[in-house]
Image (tube, rainbow, N blue to C red):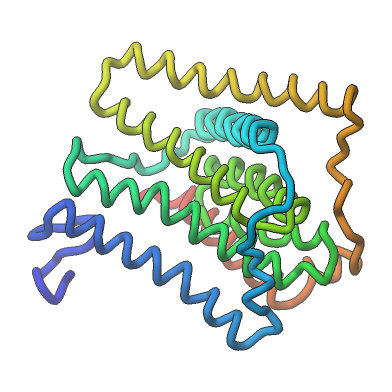
Length: 272
């Protein structure tokens, strides 16, 4: 961008249209997510089959959707409280009012993360850790997924959601259900962002409160019924493996966590 227009950046896209900027963001996102997957397939024991891009033999879409959205929105509430208590503020995301700019923004914020992040974290990384046992395969990628957001409030939601999506991939043997749930959550967030910019304030507040409260309460109720009446257990379908501390204390994983944790703290304490 700087070569084409002097001084142009993604933060200050002088000389570029909104559609052009969103197109560049989409291209960067695709390369950033697909590059590591290709690299892992080339240099590690990971195979295409380990990505688990297959139709799940059986799962409960309604139960899992409500449970995931409940967990994600409970994380949003905790993240908002942390933001309020610490006085930190994430950079606001602005959306165009329509046209190709809005379509590209939707692809960048909703479709790409749902497909690409699930392929990388629940597909490649979890598939690579799968032989170490379900606990390591679920929690290892989930922590990296949370830290890669480089935002404390968003990281809380990402960690909770990542653990659930990791469990779902282990339980069903497929990342496709996780893609669907991830996409649904992104669409709700996208809709709220759009309404915040272009709808009456009171209407948006009502919708936000409904989403933040209704999904967690519904998730608690459904989970209680599943546990007490159907004998549901999260441990069903999981397999044992190595001591999880062996994975979390490995040099490569520890270095990745420390770098991302340092970047997250830096983003939180250093003013923009």
